[in-house]
Image (cartoon, rainbow, N blue to C red; front, side, top):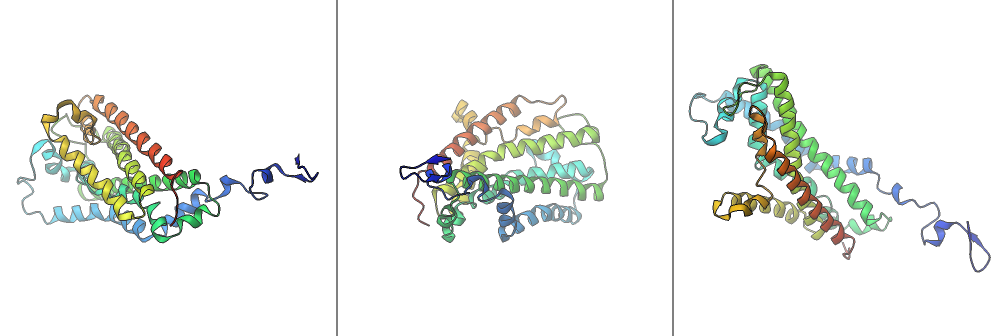
Length: 298
């Protein structure tokens, strides 16, 4: 309790200008934001497509009249050729074909749409007038977006493993870069691949979130993050850049291949995790700095 100049005793909370009983941590609960996002059509469609894609791939293989033909070359050719040899290999193939674009778009959609969509609807200023502190609003929205991004990745991998096992059976994980990996160990390696992809896609998530707090156009935030990721991928193919390629966000995006070798090669995976954390830290710090200082008029 603290006294005022008039002798009236007021609560400490009142001296700060806040209403009696106001608690910043009670505004915009995390699960309320999760439920709000779950009710949105883009969330339902995105998560639904994560379940649908493995089924589409499975049906496509069923209509393949030349399963022994040329399914693709390069270092990933084995993934295509062995995709129908077991559930683990089918899941690995599905994750591979999704990691270069589909998962990037899904993560960018969840994280790039979260704040910009509120601004485009004109509801952002009302959220802040509740009042929800700006930092809390960003933290809650970011955590909800990351939760749905992680759920999308897990749904894709789990569905692919389930339908692949039902159709092609349970067999060791195979590839041309290593000896046959027992099924039990193969599951652990598959989990490691999923975890590493989630770490790499943290770059996309943080970049999309930065763009989301910088614009009122959700499509611009999502598209900007995807286009910058594609640009980085293109630049990474230019060997003339030399060591500069090591600093590109996408340079270590395929380091998960090291988990398919015997023994596992983790050097690039460690470098990729450090790179992802560094980029995510910079982008998120910029996002919080930008939003806590901008004038919210929409």
